Length: 321
Image (cartoon, rainbow, N blue to C red; front, side, top):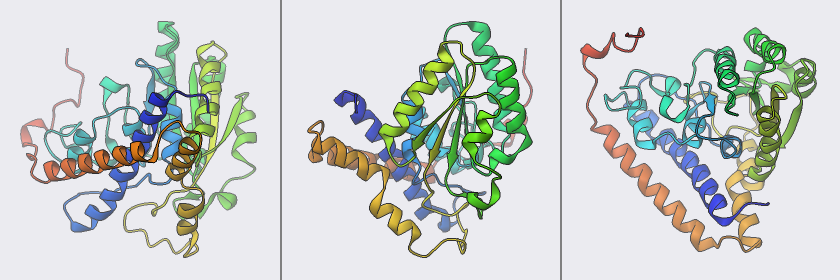
């Protein structure tokens, strides 16, 4: 735990922001005001934040259909995100992307993606740009255990190795490919499979922010040094279903409650930093209260935000010179 109080404070706030953003959406989604599918990231906060805390301004990330956590960890505006999820004209993508397609190029966030595994080739393209610039920037993709079976992921790994690209593959094994256990749906294991392409893999406890941070720190350094692609394999679980409305009959009834009680990422950070005397419980409580107030403001604002007009339907579809 070799981080200063300011960095730990920032990381805890980012994790709390992700948690409360998602927990609130779980409450708001059944009310019928949010269109489309919503996939929540609660339970995996340590992964997104542990990785993104190692990134610089000019690095890129690309996400998945479960992308809110990655967006927030990269610094996307939570109000703009909430407005986007509610389909408002002042959302990050003018209300046209919704939950599964949030992007913010000003933050190097190249987008969430509703097509499983489709972000990998895009992230490889961004890594080509990083290498061409020669400024030490890298490209990061987040991939779930289910998406790891897609051919696009294999092709992206192979090309990243062949071209020796500064590309970090973050593999998030949350235990379930939609509704199928990863122990059943993945032949072999993700670490060995990835190493088979010639990519070094650093493993991390996806519930432990410090474990993820340290693994990502080594993997990012490998990419920045011009050594080619690297990977982080982090294991955690999602607290909600594959999508909002998923009955989750494939899970034991006490499974999530047990994870929340025994290995929750936010609880672990709180326990470690208070025991070490780095931050007090009072300081962390203040962060919790500030984040909850922010989320309240985001939701209330999104409910009354302006709807997009028909005039923007064809804008930003093609590059305009």
